[in-house]
Length: 187
Image 1: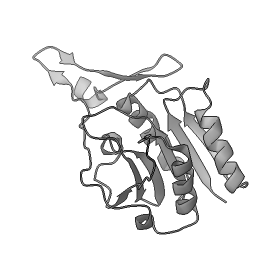
Image 2: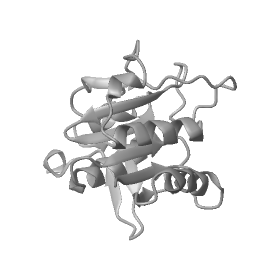
Image 3: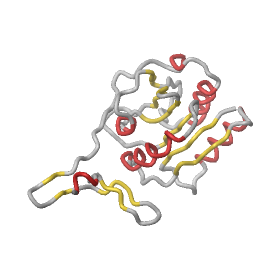
């Protein structure tokens, strides 16, 4: 069996997440899915990182987490597979993981694709990689270490004498506004 979480900016109107789940169920009927969110603002990896970082630590060891948000950067997009802190992660090498983890992952590979159309979210390849990792096979059989691990820094607030300039990271469904201004900094 296996447990897979999904965090994407794919929305709920299109077929992509349904197709991905259907392909997984065909190969592994006992797999369980948890949708963390499919409503991340398009290409907003900071928002995705906030949602994901607050949810994933509550899942059991061995959970596979798929992050389908691409932050559009200057580097050629590539999918990473990562093992860290007992969890398995698949997502884009666009700085997302640097917003979630304090330290760069040690066990990570660029998922090797033979796909000629260079599609970033190649669903059959993602399913193949997920099944490989859920079955306990070696991470390094999926590809080589990336030549470059993209790192981004979270936006830091700017402080003047009587003013703090911050950024809204996320607004939840209750209207709570999450900013990069901490309570300690505010006081």
